[in-house]
View 1: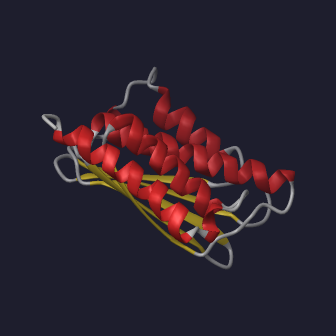
View 2 (view 1 turned 30 degrees about the horizontal axis):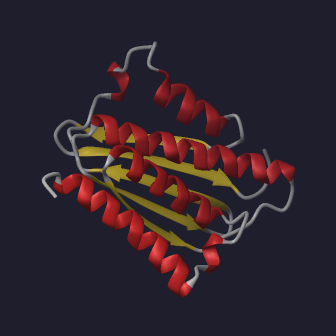
View 3 (view 1 turned 180 degrees about the vertical axis):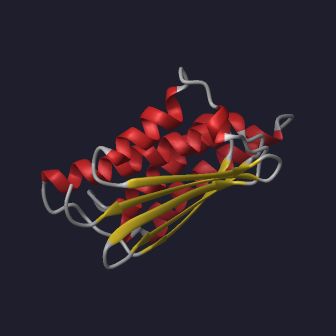
Length: 164
């Protein structure tokens, strides 16, 4: 009880479990993109003691192996953006917004933390370059990084529904 952040993290984890047990959640069906985003959000929340607020509009399931690889890249990049925010933003809450449109899946990871200059990131830092940008772009998607010192960071990930 003397560590309120640990108590809050445990309570959020138990709340997720209780909601799933009481109400079920259609998004938790195997292969759902929305469920995968919620899962990585919960994983990062538990591992780093932050709050991850996730909103998704629409859902989809991969139709084939190529789709599964694209969605895996998108989810992996989202996880890396969340971990970066947890480690570097100085904020205790990170927001994720995901939407499936007619043409693409868009995911935005945003914190209101200290921000950074993307052009000043050392070349030996692989999180943004490899774990986010390369992972998404190698599957036909795009990544946009907007960050302002003192105002936070937003990572925008877009993955087309077709192609690769």
